[in-house]
Length: 308
Image (cartoon, rainbow, N blue to C red; front, side, top):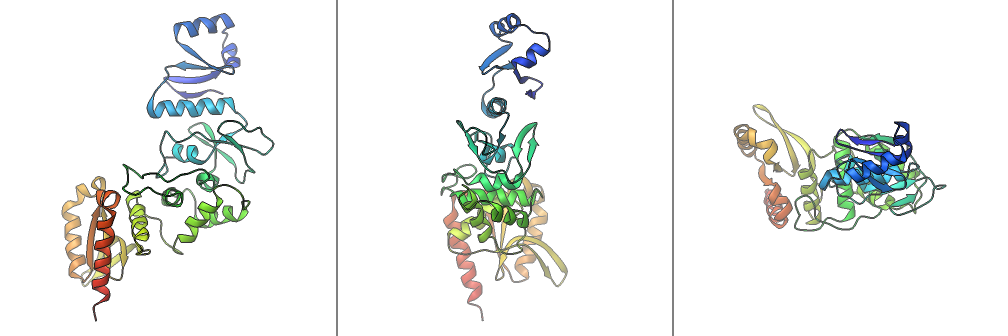
């Protein structure tokens, strides 16, 4: 196996022999530092990196050591950059039931094909999401949420991202849950995510929107309708993030809304004039002041519901 980029690659000793190197050449290259022995007949050509690139090197090395396996779970989610998962995730591989287990390797009955992510073998998106909750523990969300996210919430972040990007569908995920053995780790978590999801709901449009729904649900406020198109006497006002009982929540992310300041505020004025209670919340509100989000929303709902 050879994998890497222009600055580094993981090579087997057979590949080095194939380009004409002898054992003496390999030993000399290791002394010079142009090769690094990794054990098991594997060598790193180029520099050993730290951070995200170092994690990717570790994934490549793990795959080279177990050519019968494919990355799965958190590793595959991080390679796909699914919401809630990033480089640095524990490296996990899956092999067929006939394969041998080992550190970070578990045996599964594969339900989908092995695909390639950046040149690495991986479980397909549906099986990745199925296995994602197998070993998760509660942890903060992006940039350290005030309340730790439980495994169901973490998998929900990834599921909504995959649906948003068109990588899978709710029907396909329901099918793989039905096909999986009931004792399969992770199945219960994905089943819970799908059970909590309103029938026919559109995917959320951002990490922030998913997190806001989770905050509202945790605060006992239930689910809001997503991506609702509002109108007034002049026609279509636009699509809002979340809406329930004429209470509108808009999630204001700096990256998207910074260049839309004037247009957004014109839209907000029309929404308010049409009789809606408009509550804009920022990333910091959702992640670091969830009580503010739930209290404000509950008060707005109570005000609307108390109207004649």
